[in-house]
Amino acid sequence: MTPFFDIAFRDTLTRLIHWRRDVRAFRKDPVPDDILRRCLELAHHAPSVGYSQPWRFIRVQDPERMERVIASFERANAEALAMTADEDKGLYARLKLEGLQDAPVQLAVFCDEKTRKGRGLGALTMPETRAYSVVCAIHTLWLTLRSHGLGMGWVSILEPEEVAKACDAPDNWRFIAWLCIGWPEKEESPVPELEKAGWESRLPFDEVWKTL
Image (cartoon, rainbow, N blue to C red; front, side):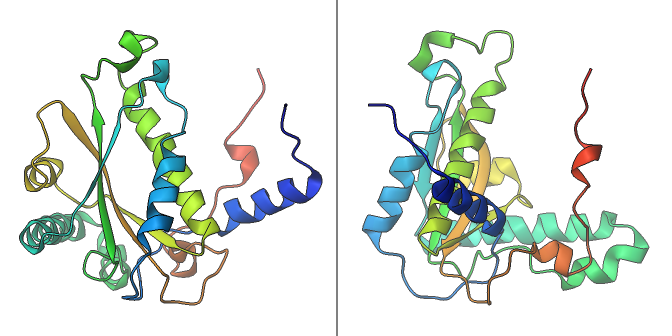
């Protein structure tokens, strides 16, 4: 039977999308394993090019591996600060950009670029669509976690090769994202943190689309 999604559901979905936030401050309370697994299983239902399902999730709990990832962030963040425009350096330095030492769940997400699933369908001319598929899974996970009251932060200020080594990732796995997951510490808001901090504002919709 074809599912029916009524106006109430669409309104709820709209609120979910508006309230999805990049969370960086977390409480230490653990995330129940059953909730985490349920959210990851839904992420596994994301669309993928050629039905290749190239996403690979690794939960990192080992302290030594986490130390290597945190050290990678510190190096990359220092380099990013040094390259930031002088007028923005003070604001950048005040931003909290990760929850690596706070969030109870730390996930590394990779793309298996040599997967045989999907038999190459749709990826011969644009192999990067496998990585795009992983991003679809990440966004699905983000929304699903939010529906449970959980927050997620995507840490991109990292050295991909160092993270891959810390996770013992195979050579054919491409690092896509580091995700910090847990219960938000701060009072939540539909306004993005970077917008509240004065770093950037949302583009008007009319500037990002056109008809030809």
